[in-house]
Image 1 (tube, helix red, strand yellow):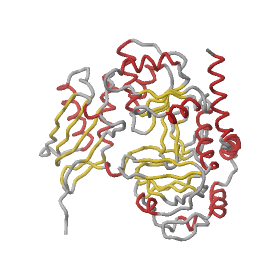
Image 2: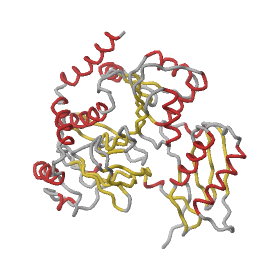
Image 3: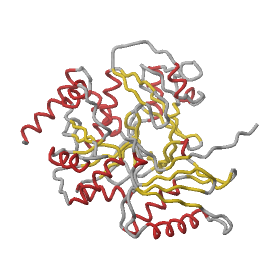
Image 4: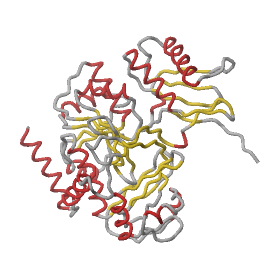
Length: 420
């Protein structure tokens, strides 16, 4: 078995070589850039911009950081409408949680940079790109091309949802992956099945959760189920990994070719090495807070302190003029699960002012009424609500609301009146 696992790893690495993707060169480059404590980050970005000369949203070449910061943000719509010279290479497609389909073009070197950043992050946790990967994703593509791709990349897709989820998890464990990678919600569902059925996964070195928000209590639950550390990844189809969790729990910025800004909390990302498409101050649609950390164990000292998610889902409303950040819901539910040793999935939907529907994957261990009373008290306390403000909360059980492969913990369905 060990010989076969090593052989499959070598096939995956040889696949990159056969496709002439210069992965090894950029693996060394990423490590060198982050290892050099004396590296002038601003100078490095300026040098890249002067060489690539990307086109900003204002239609002019950007040759320095000063010029970059003068550009208007680039929207997904503007990116779609741009015309780029066709070239041989690779493409990625995303419909995104924003519902805006976007096509991304990559040269071999650009793809190699993305893979090298991923490899750098994995190596810091004792993993290697090309090792046996169980991908907990949506339904696997049932095409010959997808099957060949997954075989060459040494991965297998598992979808532990709907009917037969238990059998899927059993097959996952029997396949003996070296690490797991997937949507946080589906990984959590697999962990729940493992705990309920008393399964014992072996040999898993790490679980990488991506694409969706995950709470500390959920990470602990997953870690106990798989007997492996849980690592959070933040990224996008446009840039692949943007930030990755270190062993101390900080979510470090890890791509040395990305320049990341926040404007009123919204992320603006520039890829200073991308020649196939100009991505200058690109509005990804996410909101987060960054800060400087003393930790230098991975990538930059800049870390994402708090990831809020899609900006379109950012606020809950008590009235047309009173609002609060939806992350309050996540913090409250996480506090409940930590306090009472629970772990379940949830979603909050707002359809009216001061009115919220809570969807729970299962009944809390202390009962629905206990959860409702505790949560109501916690929210009133955290929001410092006046006694005359009444929160209306409805609770629903079941997983019908999790039909999509991805989900977000908060959906804003208020119909706002137009002002003229």
